[in-house]
Structures are given as C-alpha cells and as structure tokens.
Length: 160
Image (cartoon, rainbow, N blue to C red; front, top):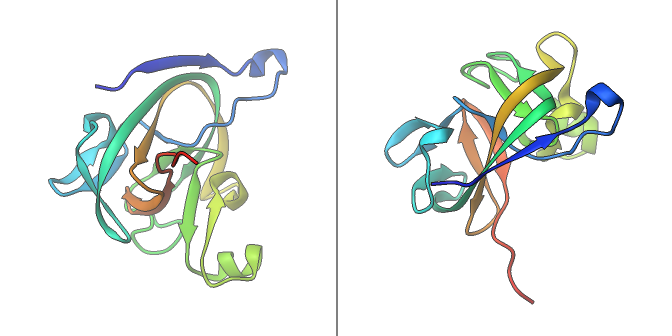
C-alpha cells in the first residue's frame, strides 16, 4: 500500500503551487490485468508501457489542496485520446505524436507538460480544492497508458 502525504499549495494566500506530476484518483491505467483505477495499483503490479509491460516499483499518493490541475476532455487530442475525461497535474508529462509536438518542439513526438497543452475549451487549467494525486514510479522511465493518454512515468534513480 502506498503512503499518503499532504500538501497545501497556499494558492489562497498567493503562494506558488507545489509542482508534482501525477493523475487524479479514478484514472484508469492499462495493466496486465486490464484497465484498473490508479488507486488499485501497488508495487509489484505490471503496467503496459510503450516498451511492453513494466513493474510498478512505487506508488506515491499526495493529497494536494488548492491543486493546479489540467482537465483533458474525451477526444481532445484525437479519437480516444483520451477515451474519457482525465484530470492530471499541470506538470504531468503527456507524450504526443502529432502537430502539437511539431508546433511546440519542432519534433514528430515529444513529452509535454499538461499545462502547455491548455486551450481553454477542451484542455482546461483549473484549481481543485483537494485532490488525491497518484504518481507511479517504475523501474525505469517509461510512457504508460492512462485513460487513453500516453503519460510519462518516472523511473527509480540509478545510484552513481
């Protein structure tokens, strides 16, 4: 089971928000056992990535108050991307392979912080009073499938 920490960003007092990558509870993650809500995952579970299946090394759960989040509407990035509305932190890396990658980075594919994709209609920035933010840590950095999106997922630090 994952340990839970709590952060108040202090947005009500005008303090800069803490920037964490992650997805809100309820987001479905593709695993070897099918699509499961992120809160059901535990260390040792296997998730599907662009490179195959990988082991979840750690699940970090943080309760964030006054969280700066990005809500991505169904099909906002193409048919089935995402398949359902997804709520991610503004720092969550989204792997894109379309005109947006070319426009933002001059490349065919790129990992883009969710906040950079906001258009005000289909991809909207919002402040959520309180959210349980889940971050998966794998054995190595990978791209996972979450709610129809491809999301960057950090890997364990390799000691020097």
